Length: 213
Image (cartoon, rainbow, N blue to C red):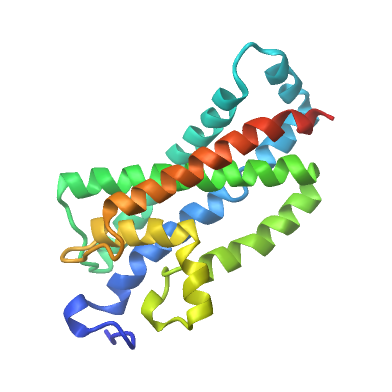
């Protein structure tokens, strides 16, 4: 298997480098369209019942985030099995597996709450699907999912550094692969993802009632 330019042979094959990015991509593509469920709930009248319940809006948003995270874990199991079948240098350290699961949960929650914000703004399924498709590719390609950040031009490197997917992939690469290290540090990766999730949750909770109007 060939090595990617800028990725030394000592760091493993490009296929190994790519596997965590594919896992993050599958979680992203699922979570980014999670907001359409809220639009369906509005159309079915379910959302109006949520709004008159005593549950805090943040609890409603977090419930959807956790649901998205569980779906992300199911996808992770499939990607892990495929990676093992393809001979990827997967780490079976229980701590690494638990850490990767936590990162997937938080990453999925992050992008699902972002998706809910978009749904609250556009309010219709057609607009949401169009915007969701426009957003996914830039988020994915402006990250370190398919090529090292050191190979990017300066302007793209700056965008990638502000992209939460970059930190999710960095953490997954460190936890998922044998002998791989985090470029930013696992604590930094986790802190960035949690911070984005917290901000998006607060924004989504504030906008959530707008879907009923």
